[in-house]
Image (cartoon, rainbow, N blue to C red; front, side, top):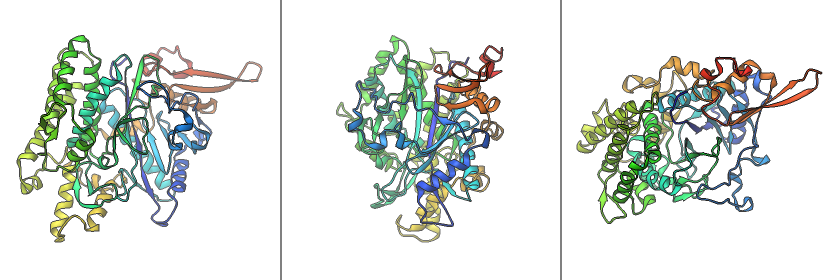
Length: 502
């Protein structure tokens, strides 16, 4: 059994029909998700029995009558269509977007593979649905935004207030290396310009349960999909990434800092020092400031009366994570690889900050790890080549959109692959489209779908419901308990104790 943190991603895609530009996106999303269903699995429904969207991590529950309809994901009216993917993932319609929720993994590099497998599965479904255009971005520049979420399983014993405090500092400042870049400033692109993050302008509160309005930096939805001792930290602040390094760092750095929060009492003073020194005076304002600071120089007001820039704060978080790593042995979690990549990308950012615009345009290696920088280079070169006076030219927004188009083997990121640092093996991605990760319960979920699809009636993250014929031919219902995310793995099933995992 791997001792790593269980984590995964959720990606909402934008969608269009090139043959019918005015088509209803909700209808297109339904079309794509139906096309994603394998015939042998099309009858399987998603089990909403353990969903609890109004449970709040701060304590208490939001009355369902007070919740916005968009929050009630377990309501019958919200259940448009769900597809069980053969790799143990979930494909479904979320509002007007097709969404891929990856199978559970135990480190950031495996999560990257699962995320890229999702891109391929969704692109295949888009083609099968009649050549639909699929985009992995977060905004339309006209006021609408959609999510690219992260999920981390952690120890519920850690007070949520401390989780929120440290993660707020991290989420605000990590944009400098996780941002995917965006043309336009403001939710409706009210101003011309370029910024680091697509999501920043759409986050308007510090903390809250909601995800589609008044979006918070810290989301408090409390559904662990695991045992009572676990908490799932649901993160909604991140961009959808086309480059590998930002996605690995988005997941891996957050994993390491959650490990710091979970470590023994000797880390309490270190965490207190981080909070005392780096807590932001106005996190929402700081989030917007960081996103619009392409030069990486703007100071952020701190709660203690001081000022610091995002790069300085990230260096302090890296130092704390590295110091904690010296005393923690988590084999197989790729922590050292994440630390090395984190260190490298902060050095990249230091070079970006010290260089002028011409120097930034010439940065090749750094752009292969910093998605917003590579996108900015493409856009700035186009702007100069076409003599565009500012960032309001619609051709820049068109290129920004082209970057997000998911069309494996033909899209813009693929054509620039010689300039991009690749961290996911293509063969692993191909296998991950069909097989669940071996080190989590997703392996068993995937095996059930492959070995006895006719018997599977419903699936969820924490259980699978089977209906089989009894000895007398009568139907019998059986539930496979997957509440332990690190149970029912390939190694634990190898001895045949679980008949459905042999």
